Length: 433
Image (cartoon, rainbow, N blue to C red; front, side):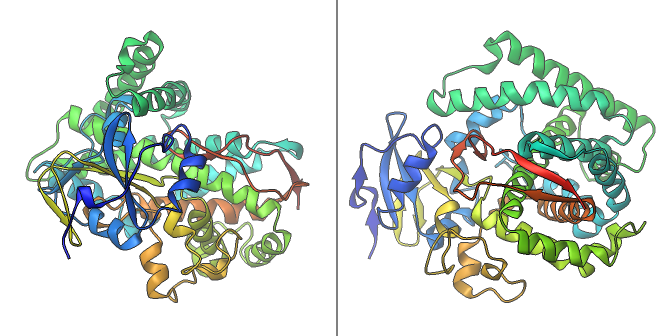
């Protein structure tokens, strides 16, 4: 039977899904497959059902477009017209340009660069009783991203990103509550964005003149080989999108994984035992996926427990029939992958960490439908291969030298900016093996 928007319950006193994320999720989970709520005073639709989520994600661009939160991120994150927010005809050729260097094969060709960067950074750590997983993993992945994306020219990049991160996250939270907020009116934001742009444009010019083996060179080369070569502005937008899709998402995932391992010594020792067979190998990057499968399993389960990019939104741009529910033009539709990831019908004891929740190649149909850490449909995350390879390699290399220990075995307190994070992040002990 066809439903209209008016047939769907309205819960008018819901908190904000970004600034009060934990409270919103706790209350939303109790309200059936979908409900209406007020987002900044306007009617929006919230989905709790994985089948409806997938129907929305797979909808054509003629029926759904950029959502209110990611549209704000376009301004707050300086994304410009990156494919993350691009629902136009130019999306497909842009997607094709980025798909080549970010493919399964393309990412593994970056293995030597990633291995050298990660191993060097991890070797520089020192034993500590005050290991901050957020800071350490952010720096670790930022250095790896700079190495792979910009080769040897990335030290300035690290400083620029650190400065812009703070401004971007603050601006995103502001825009999520007030879409009229203009980040560039804040001098500190404008200055940080200007520094980011200046650095990226200089790197694009250098790679156009003399390509190297880094990821930016491959993207520039791929763009030049397309039917419609991309301008510097278009390349800049995609590089910024890649930075923010591949930086804090992976860093937050690794920070959550570090917290998990610190309270699961049995899992951590099993990981170290697998790593021992290839410890110190120069071709570690080629062998770890087969020799250390537990690293990938830990990443998969961490993303189930803590899907860092969990909030997904769209806006109906034409009348959209979502599995028998007719939605009107202009309606914002939102959901969090946290909810299906913690569905007790799909995952036994979903609040507990267990690599048996998402067994490789053996997930049930319900588990497959409920597991959406990288979205699906035309907007599936292009960085899926880079993120999973990089995170798994980082955990394996960490276990090569270090153990993580925590005296606290309590649930993390979670909060949201553009991504899910712990507030506060616990301090861990870092112990040499």
